[in-house]
Length: 173
Image 1 (tube, helix red, strand yellow):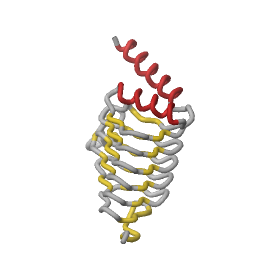
Image 2: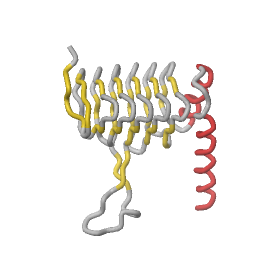
Image 3: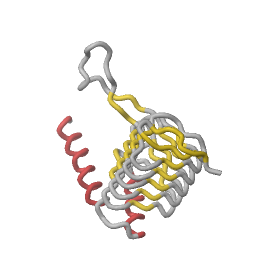
Image 4: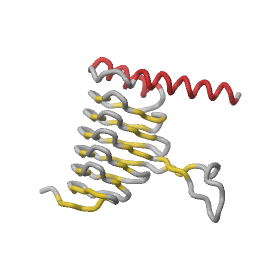
């Protein structure tokens, strides 16, 4: 049974890697959306998947209309990821809704398990290139995350943040 599960997982990853390596033609984006819906995701209209997007596993994923996922975006959906309408996610950004547990004392990390927490990105947000969004974070409507930022805390609507960890740079007026 364990071997069968392994083959299923690896086959799923192989098919996903092939499919998501294809160009972002609208008809191919519709096929990518269908693939994600088949594994339980809720995908809006006109979502753009650049080549190299990697979504693990797709369950607990909600993408609104006109979401744009740039080249090399990585999304883990163990804790759930919700991205609102008209949101841009920049090149090589990672949105993580699951992370390893650090065990108490000197326990073994390898078998300590995972903690899952929902990541919410509201509508009309812009996540710059090479950002890292950690589990449990909410990014408000119209917020902008500067490239290379590490988001560890919630971001208020219409706020521009940047840095490591991300801090407020400016409020959009």
